[in-house]
Image: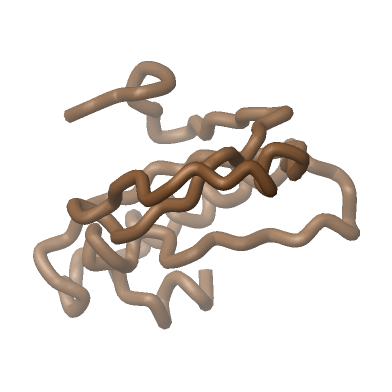
Length: 113
């Protein structure tokens, strides 16, 4: 496991990174994720908050373990912890494919969660 920012997260932990600056474009997803190019137009754009929530890797998107109450409660808890830090109701949330791409989570289940 490669850890870039902090120690691996516990069951009831999320990582919040504030005052981030976007400085490059990327391509790929999961194991193909790579730097693409630097773009100076990004230097003036700031995001105030990035929430990092870890995902569980499943064998495939139809893996029935992710439908168990234990796993669903884990995902609800993780998302609550990660998103409760920001109390601004006008802020938008983009979760991408939170655990659904490279980690084989079911995107319809995650949408409901």
